[in-house]
Length: 171
Image (tube, rainbow, N blue to C red; front, top):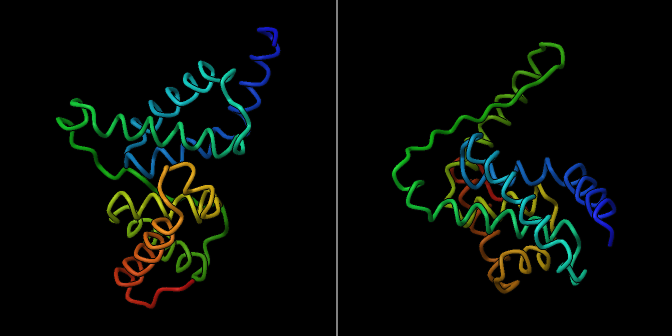
């Protein structure tokens, strides 16, 4: 593949999957700044290893796997252990200010806060399944764990969220 063709493909991947990578990194790292660093490192690796992508899984699964590995590397790094990370997330809405929207926003913010409080392995499941819309098989491939483990972690994550939010687990 010619260098210009490769750059066009990398650009397409950044445009198509960039927001997913940034969200995944934010959920795992709980910091916008660290998520942006992970985003950059993810696409550096995508560029570096693009020629080795064999198409055994979808591009989304491949790139999400790289992003998760980058985040895990960052979480293990000595620098991360010395830094206190704060939850600097927020939800924004551009809709009109009605009571229903406020209640909906409050519920969404409560859900996000609850998700961010989950242990890493459960937060990861919720994010990949509900926000990245990966199926059990894709999550299994991305995380390199058995499908049964994915299912049990997803069940546990739902149960923990239900407890935190004072309801019953769905799904």
